[in-house]
Each structure stands twice: as C-alpha cells, then as structure tokens.
Length: 236
Image (cartoon, rainbow, N blue to C red):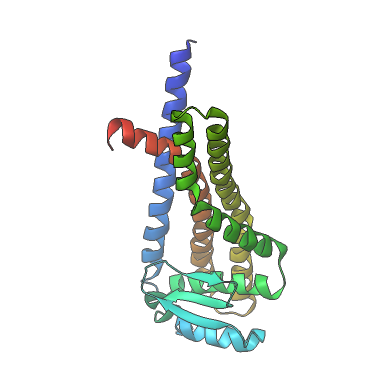
C-alpha cells in the first residue's frame, strides 16, 4: 500500500468520524424535541420537580437561574446554581424532567464532594484563563520566527500547543463526570417514582445522549486544527 493510499484512508476515516459526531449532536436535539412532546404522568413541571427535590435532598442553598438558550442547561459549581432554560423549567415533559435531573445530578456530585467534579472545575478555570492568551502567544511566536529569534519563537508556539491540548484533555476528564451525573439522575428518578417504567426508558435515552454530547465535544476539539486548515485551504 502506497503512502498516498494510507493518507486517503486516514482522511476518509476522519471525515466519517466528524460526520458521525455531527449526527450525534443532531440526534440529541431531535431526541429532546421528541420526548418534549410527551408529558410525564405525574404532571409536574421541571421547575416544580427541582423545588421539591431541593427540599427532599436538603439542598436549601441550591439556587435556580434561567437561560433563554435552548439546551443551555448547566450547573454552576461556584455559586451552587442550576441554570435551566425557560422551556425546561416550565415544561412537564419527560425530556424536561430528565434534563433538569441531569443538572441536579451535578448538584448531588457537589454535595457528595465527588472528586471528578472538583478536578474538572479547577482545570476548566485554569484552561479558560490560559486560552485567553493563546492567540497573542501564537502571534508572538510567529513574529519571533520571522525576525530570526527561532528558539524563542518555538518556545511560544510550543506553549500555545500545550495550552490547546490541555483544553482537549480537560474535555476528556469531563466525560466520566457527565456520565456519572446522568447515572445519578436516572437512579433518583427511579427510586423516587418521579417517572413511570415506560418514561424511565425514554429518560435513559435522553440522559445517555446528554452525556454523549461531551464525547462529541472532545472529538470536535481534537479535529479543530483540521477544520481550521480545511477552511484556510478550501474555503469551507
């Protein structure tokens, strides 16, 4: 097999992987919309579910904030805040209950001092801070190379590469944290009879896909340089 054939095979595999990841993201959205049309038999909204869960779990310091962004739901560890979209908070669908339960799973992790959550939070803060300087560092490295100070230029460029790959590794750390949150959410919904057996099947699909979005995010970050190069060379 020639070198060109190997490169072609690798290129095809990369394209197929990126296509699969794109489909995964689209599948998350379509699955959410599908089960957002199915009201849970208990009839409570996600907002009511969270308020009742706060009291039941004794998480009285837990706060709830709104966001207008669809599927922009998150948990802010620093302020102990569940950030839920308006569509989720006011909906009584299986999808809304499942999404809010996933974020509640992160609050449970925080309450239990789950090590993975603490580590990922600290690493995320450090990386976000460093990423703000990555463009100036790259520019400084290129300028150094152009004007003849190659060693210093390479140090700058290696530093930028280290920051970039560190941000990718952090996404890898997030994956088990997200799967653990989904696992906690499903157990809580089952143990407290929030959803019926049939609804739990739907919820499991939603929670699994929600965790897989972080797998998608990890691989997307890995292939970001390829996307940048493709855009620069091919223009799309």
